[in-house]
Length: 493
Image (tube, rainbow, N blue to C red; front, side):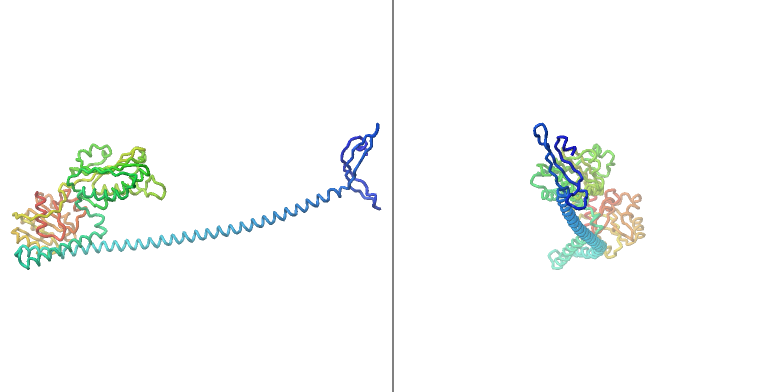
């Protein structure tokens, strides 16, 4: 009442009694009041409402909304739990599938590895077998070809017997070529066979392969300045090196317009000694000239740090999965095995140039056989196969040349001391030893004697022995008197 009589308006909460009830109980009420002026005085107008009648509906609504919110939240949490459970189950299933897939890939890799290992073992066995088979067949073909050649020398060229002997000889020649192809299946031969390669022919052949890999935006320029030079090596390995360098050049150029220059010429040994990149190399004095190959591109180039590491195994500037980093390391290994040298020059955004130097064969490496000229020679021939010795002895005797044969080292040493021949023709293998080692052992005692090796195939050991003058030449089996005389003529020329 004091608040209402003060002449202000407002709202008051207070406790009163519920007069309608026989039992007086305190009840909370709300009173809204305002003064109304009346003359010099005022009236108070008050509206009273029970507190419960005003707040209970609000509280009831709040409770209902709260219950509804709690129910919705519970439903949402349940759905989230259910969805999370499904997601975990799906993730677990995907992990199991990935594990099974990985396990399957590993099993497949192991299976492929086992198959590859078994295949390599079979190839190794085949290589060993084919090498042995080729050796035996060469021994069989040698007397066949030798006696056929002897008959051809003794018979009239117009007779039927001469034609028959010629058929036998030509068939033996074809069989010899087949045996050479079989021998190429030998793992040992594939890795070590070195032949006289006409450099210009090899370059032209590899240029055709390079043209096939060059895209339309890259122009291939060739500059070949060669004159019947021969190199001793493995053509397949050298082609691999050149192709690998050209593929790298294509990648360095990319999609922009570019050019690859393939330049081949010869260089004297003195020129190599003046090259800064080869200062630390010992340039062999056994070779007078070298084949110089340049592969130049105008691609992205390399900085000095990259250039210094390009021949390190597993180093690559390509993205993961695009390169192994073994191409240039293998190329360097192949060139070194050919007694050559390789280095590169490059600058960023100015391209790269790879230089390869391979020794040139002084003998030329030609396989042209001309009719032998008779000459007073004394020859000693050593081979474990007596049939080969008998055939060669008859053929050389027919040519009126002095020939002595031996199947053992002791007998061979005795003949060398007694006869002192001008020429020694020795099998690559004799008494489970090496014919080259035997020639090396008598080098000081018979320095002027011509030494020729009869080999199943020309490998690196024979080529190096000839280059080092341990032997003077070689002939490949099956051998004949004509082939040996041609080898002697070539050496003396």
